[in-house]
Amino acid sequence: MNRKVVLGTGVVVVAAVAIGVYASANKGDAATSKTSVALITDAAGIDDKSFQQSAWQGLTSWAKANDMKQGKGGYTYFQAKTSADFETNINQAVANGYQNIYGIGFPKTPAINAAAKKYPKNNFMIIDDIAKKRQNVVSVTFHTEQSSYLAGVAAAKTTKTNQLGFIGGMESAVVKTFETGFVAGAKSVNPNIKVDVQYVGDFADAGKAKTIAASMYQNGSDVLYQAAGGAGAGVFTEAKDLNEKQTKAHKVWVVGVDVDQAADGVYQATDGKSNFTLTSATKGVGTAVKDVTERAATDKFPGGQHLVYGLKNKGVAVTRGQMSAGAWQAVQKAQKAIVAGDVKVPAK
Image (tube, rainbow, N blue to C red; front, side, top):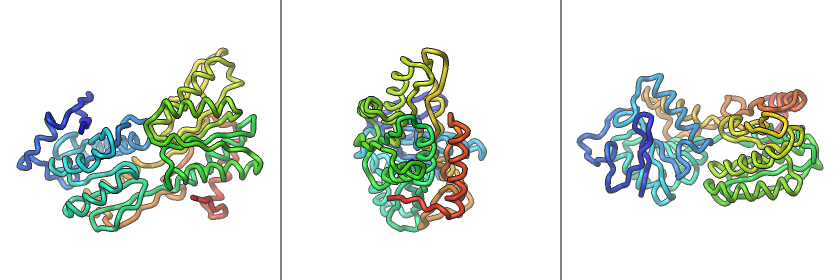
């Protein structure tokens, strides 16, 4: 098992046989702070330009505001190479005194369920899934179908071919909400619009995502929505490769996910600099991390609860991005209708 630990501004890869500063496994030196936090991430890590990065940014933001340092007694993250490492990394986090342990993403649910039973004095959070109900576990989910619906409206208002694409990571109930919302939003604008749907099979294979994107663009889709975690980088790479060979007027688009991915859409067209990130359907993972950490710090950890974040409580949103005035107006109108309850967005 390998994991990554951040020390200062550098990144050090540490093997289990030489765990170093954080994992001496000396319980006598373990942190005891009730607000100490450890994130459990997958191989894409905290710089995946997606929800794990959002979680880390939320945690570091809260830590800075509350004078919490990185390391024992403060905060850190444990990065797995495979899903087999999740439970091992949770055990390491507990052994090193981290009181609050957050599983970032639904693949960590089995490990969080097992750990919550094994360590009843620790607090656990699972994001993007519902864990077994225990008083030391909080589950956090998002109405991603709502933000995806708005992304679908934006895409349908932008496409010149009336053909869109959706590229998911691992096919699951969670990712299906992105797909379902996106398709519903697009069809609310044009019932006859075509949406090509394909899945990578995981959240890490950027090469496969790039291949899927290339096929979709070649077959006529000109706006692709990727909800594929770290694999989504491949979609941006393909769009950039295509767009750099043509004028700005003929660009193909990408819709970002989880965090604002506008910076990933910057490119040099044959007739000048431009940006192909149409919008980003953001998910407030960082907001949830800050919220739960604040509650833990004030002895109000929401154990046994299921917290849901949506448009109404600003848990999801879409960015203005590169939308035209007409597309942005349509998105705002749809958002108001969803918040008012006039539009019910399907989640599956």
